[in-house]
Length: 546
Image (cartoon, rainbow, N blue to C red; front, side, top):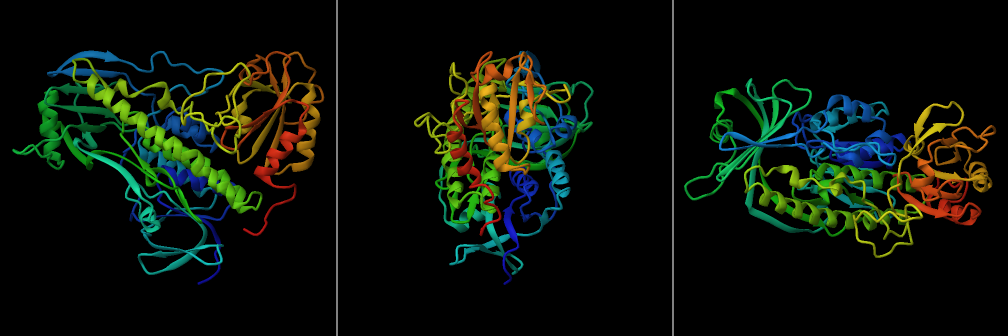
C-alpha cells in the first residue's frame, strides 16, 4: 500500500459531505469524496436550507444559485373534509435585519442543491466517486493515517476519514460507536416525490389536508412543472399495521383525503416509510475518523433541521481539519468539534421532539397546520458555543439557546452578527459577512486605538489566506489612509451589533465559521495574539508534519 496522498476521505455525498468537501477543497486540502450509490439521486428529500445554512452556502459561494433554483417558503392552505378551512403564512412578518441577511428558509429539491454543490466542488478538481462502499477502517500504529478497505477489495490510505454516510452509517458501525435513542413505531408517515397535474391545485401554496383518520400534504417542488413533495399518513391493514407505500396507495390516499381523482397522480418515486427516530452518537471522533450529519444524529423532521444540522456540522469541522492539516494547529483542535456540536445535536433532538408534539396536537383541530413546527430556533441563527474551550468565558450556557443580547454585544462563542457597511476604498455597499467569507479568521478593529493591533496582525500573518485584519471606521472618522479591505460603518449598525456604540473601540476575532472567538479592548494586543496563535500557530508555522 502506498503512502497516503489523500488528506481527507469523505464517505457520503449528500449535503453534509459535499459541504465539508467544498470547504476543505478551497483550503487546498487533498480531499476525496465517495458514495456507495451507483448514481446521483434525483429525489428531493429535505426541503431546503434554513437561514443559518444559507449564510454558510453564501460563504461557500453558491447561495445565489441556490436562491435562483428554489423559491421562498409558501403559505399553507389547510383543509378538513375536502374543504379549505384556514390559510396561514408563517413567514409573512419575516424581514431581513442588519444583523441577519436571510430571514426565512428556502425551498429547493435536495438533488438540485447537491448538483450545485457538486459543480462548485468540481471547480476545485474534486468529483464524487460513485459506487464505492467502505467496508473496513484501520488506523495504523504510526498514528499518521487510516487504511480504508472498499467492497471491491481495494484498499487506500487517508490522513483523516469523515463519515457523512447517513443514519445507517457503516463508518459509525465500523468504529463501534453507539447510536442510542428511541424509535416511535406508532408515529409513521409515507412520503415520496410525485407527479401530479390538476388545474384546481395551485402551485402557490403548500396544501395540507388533516382529517380525523389521516392526512395528506402536498408541496410543489421548485423548478418543476408538476412535481410535488407528497407526505401522508399510511394506509393500514386489517390489524392496523402500516402498509408499504405504492403508487396505487398514494392515489387512494389522495382521493380519500383531498377528493381529487387519483388518476392525476401519474408518478411516484423515492417511496419510503418514515418512523420517528431520535438517536445520537455518544462520540463524534475516534482517532483520525470523525462523524457528521445523520451519521451522528437523527431526530424528528419537525422544523426541517436534519440536513441543516449536517451542513452546520460540516462547516464547524472543515476549518478545524484545515488548520490541523497545515500544521497550524495540533490535532487537539479536532476535539472541539465534538465539544461544540454534540451538545447542539442533543438540543436539536429535544427541540424537534417538542415541535413534533406541538404539531401533532395542533392538527387535531380544524385549521391546525405545520406552522407549529417552525419557531425562531429552527432558523439556526441563535446557535452558539459559549461553553466551548474556544470561547472560554461562558461555561455552563445551555447548548443551542440564543443568548439574551448583552449590552456589550455578542459573547465569545456566539454567532457573529452581520451588518451593512461600505467598502472604504470603493464606497460600494457591502456587509461584514462579505469580509468573513472565505477560509480565514477575521480580526475586526473598531476605533483608532485598534489600528496598531491590526497592523501587527497584518504584518505577522501577511497576505495569505489564514488571517484577515479589517478596520471598521465610523461614519465620521477620517478614512483617507484606510488599508485595503477596510469598511465604513456608515449607518452605525456594526458598532451597535458588537456593543461598541458610536465612537467606541475594541477588537473582535471572528472564527472561520462566523462565530466570535474573543472580544478584547482595542489596546490589548496580547489577547488577540494568544488567540490567533491557538488557531493558527506561531507565524510561519505551516506545512508541518501532519
